[in-house]
Length: 140
Image (cartoon, helix red, strand yellow):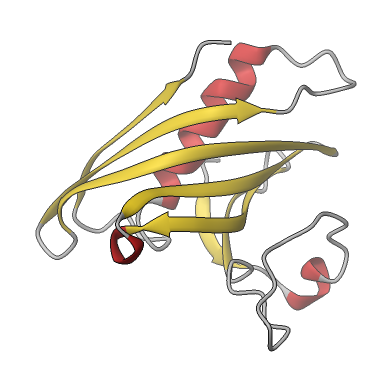
């Protein structure tokens, strides 16, 4: 099975034990949907967003990759090229990934999984009109 975009069930959100962006009114706008591969027990959760078009800065997003029981945090810078209603390309530059502390997971497997999940996530959890998604990783 591949990643699909779904609304995060409230019962699952209640079990998250990692920080997410919380607004002054208590709402958590990033906890709306996720990209999930149920067969492999992997999900991508957006935990924070900073900057972007309206702020005149590079959009930076923080994520938690729920990887078969492990929590792998990563941060990426995002650039959108084109128009969302016709044809748009998405470019990601992953700036940092926390090291998986157990399980001996291969870093290349993590990078491939991140690429697959971000590609499936698309723009606002839709791949309609997305013609290309590229994901690059900063060198350590």
